[in-house]
Structures are given as C-alpha cells and as structure tokens.
Image (cartoon, rainbow, N blue to C red; front, side):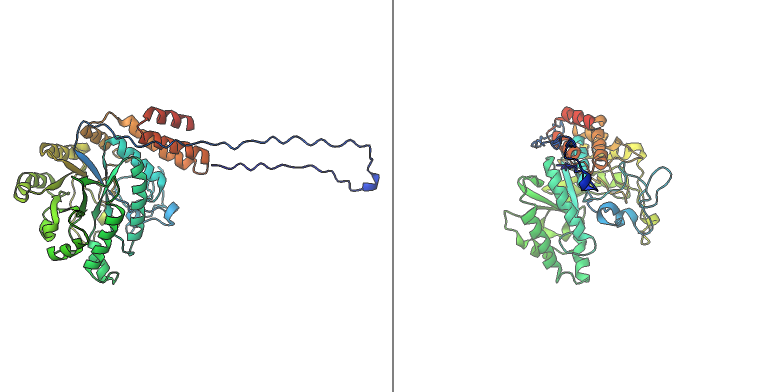
Length: 427
C-alpha cells in the first residue's frame, strides 16, 4: 500500500527584537491540520476456475524462460541481442533492435518480470491453452542456466495462480557441457542432481502435468546422455511408483532405452511429410504409451543474421498468413492426438512464436481458441496488453498496482466482466 506521509507545519513567530514585542499582540491562528487516511485497496484473491473447452485435447505451449532485459537484469540477454544486435538502438517507430524478424506486441521483455508473467498467464488462459512446458537447463550454475532456473520457478508460481498446468522439457545437453567444463563429476551425477530437484520441487505440485497420475517429463534429445545404461542409472533415483512418463524427441527413444515411454514431434524441414510419417508409420511401429503431437506457425530463424549461425545451413518454413499453423492443427486433429505441444509460445529467435506480435497480432491465439473450443474471442485477449501497459505506467502507484492485481485474480476466476470494468476505471 502507498503510504501517505502527512507533514504538519507549526508556525512560530519569533521577534528579532523581543524587548519591543507587545504582550497585547493577538496570538496567531494556526490552521487546523486535516488528517487524511491513506488510500487503500483490499485484494480479493479468487481461486482459479478452469476454462470450459469443447476439445478435451491437452494443449501445452513450449515456453522459453530465457529472456533478460536491461531494466530488470541490468543488461540485455543474448536471446535479444545474439552477437550483433543492440536493443538500446530505437528506430523512428519506437522499435528496439532485437535479434528476431518478429517483434513482441509489448516489446522485448524479461522472463523474471512478474508483470510479464501475469500478462502471459492471462493470454494462455483466455486462449484455452491448458499449460506450458518450460524449456529447462537444470540446476548446475553455468552460463545463464541459473537465471533460467529462477525465471522458471517465478513463472510456475504465477501460472499456478491462474490454474495453468506445467511440465518440463529437459535440455540434457547441459550435462555434457557441464562435464566438459568441470561443473559436474559425471553425466550420471549431474543428471541425478537435476532429476532429484524435479522430483522434490516440481513433480509433487498439484498442477504439474501428469498422465494417469504419472508426471510427464520430456527431453529435448537426448543430446548429452546417449545410452540406455546411463539413463537407467540416472532414473535409479525414482522408486517404481515415482517414475515419470519420459518422452524423447521423435526417433530418439532408443537412446533412453526402457526408461522412455514415448516420443514427441517437433519441427522438421519437410514438416508436413515428416508429421504424416510419424503419425501414420512411426506410431504403429513404436506403439508408445504416450506421445505428443506438435503444432506451429512457421520456422524462420535469425541465427545467421544475428551471428549465431555457426555455418549451419538453416532452412525455413513460411508462416503463410496462418496457413502453416492451420495445416499442422488439422494433422494433429486427424490423428486424434490426446496431447498437443504448441511449438512454441515465444521462441523469437526461431520465429516459431504464437505470442502476439506486431506482425501477426492475435491471429495465432484466435486459431488456438477455435482449436480449444472456448467462448473467448480476440477482444478478451486484448485485456492482457492493457493490463501489462497499465502495470508499467503505474509501477510506482501501489494502489493502482493493487487494483491491477485484482484484475488478474478476476481473470483467474473467470470473472471477465468485473476485470474489464475495473481496468476501465483504472485507465
């Protein structure tokens, strides 16, 4: 709450020549001090209400918690700059120079910013998306992994308030990097440390994504640990009833051996052909107990232009004014997928984001709304941007910030009319 400090000024008249002061002079009148009660706003915290959907398919967005801004982190993170871009450079239209072909509607941001996390939570919820998979780099303190771990934990805290589920996509490549840089004694030790952390801190949370009561854990690869024997030793930290459903990237499950229970699709150069082959051939051969289909809007990387290309011959998948997303949705629906991963929510470096941008607006989220079968529309989504901009505008006004927090809880509780009414008053 903002604290108003009321200062009382007492007037004293001091004569510079006391001997000439008359005792009959009138006593000066001191104006009465009006005590003003500080303005306050009591927040009503509402339990999150599940969004009604006509489509029972679980929609989970792949979420990148790896962005840093100068305002919050003290400098711009590499995912906004790559090797040669500087967001401090601003063009005549007010756009910062970032390492991406597409520009977030709210501009470049920081993944540890609570305003940003509430903004994302509102968009996810009103789009009919059930939750997110965090792209996770483990617990070892190296490169930017520690700040990614922190931003993941902060996001989990806020997303749970909105009733959003969450899971982990483990970047096990970190284990090989950590070993090479003497940050872990072995791949097994590093992997056990990371999975023990997940078991104790995430898997037990009620909104952690599960399949038939088992936590779901994805590995983007495996890329660092590549033998069934090593994965078996890492998974020895789990008792039989604790073991998660462990999914590898498509066509990689043999590297994890018996600990793998399935695979998930991703983005490939011949994308529609690759998806069709997986759905129609690979699944029949593999017969997994669980798998994830993927849908995406396109794939246009900035790596070469940003200096992160490393000589890779990058290919692209055009966005086609929303047709790419539409086609991948149709393939997933034709396959009657139980789980769909949206790849991705916000990977701007690869141009796979469905988050609102200046170029595509809310068009991708309205497609997701149709897929989910929710009653919300684009106008409902726009409340998130108003919310975010007002949080920034009134960042030093504790009362207005409290009212905006109430807006967030109204949305979590699906009291959308109350949220819109209050945000109009704040404006």
